[in-house]
Length: 248
Ligand code: SF4
Ligand code: F3S
Ligand code: FES
Image 1 (cartoon, rainbow, N blue to C red):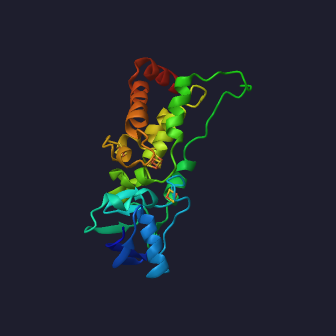
Image 2: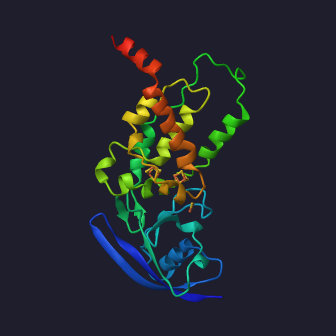
Image 3: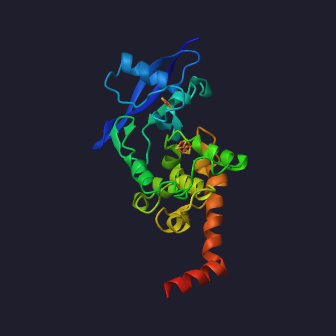
């Protein structure tokens, strides 16, 4: 069954833009990305949108639908009333390049700032057997498709552009947590989590977890444990004394 839906799609570039109205055909089983493609095919051939897999796995088609960060390819049209006007806008936290395409290089910059996995130098293949619990913990975090919806929604940078310098965002704090909890990682990542990656800016609003299309429990399984580990180290009297003696 087909019907005509009303869409508002943001069109513009770094210098500004506006919402444009469209009436467009919707067919059973379609997702928002299908509708954007139909607009390109019929009414707006130069409409810019980034996508790749159309299967919720490449993380390219991130945008905002009715103000909520979403993957366009995983947002079913059947979740909306036929009479509803659907508004599609680019990710708000990152600079617009054109139409629905944003420049997400902030995230690659933050990725580069995380120290790489640092196993013991003399470790040979087969020397260490990972426990299943450690494998499972990493596996949850490794489901990340780098869609950056969590980075987009977190109010620390969404509402405060000037925090971008000091805050890595949930995706990369989760990476720090993953490495810090890895049994073979020799780096002490806790000082950097506080000072370089801005862990203290996160006040556990959990919006990141709510929008994650991979249903990773970013806050409960990564950010809160990392905060606990940082606090333990910071306020542990033995560590504190050790730091003091070393500084002399
Ligand atoms: Fe996307 Fe989830 Fe990865 Fe964040 S943690 S980038 S929301 S998949
Ligand atoms: Fe932001 Fe997630 Fe923390 S939304 S404030 S990083 S819990
Ligand atoms: Fe790949 Fe949507 S097109 S996640």
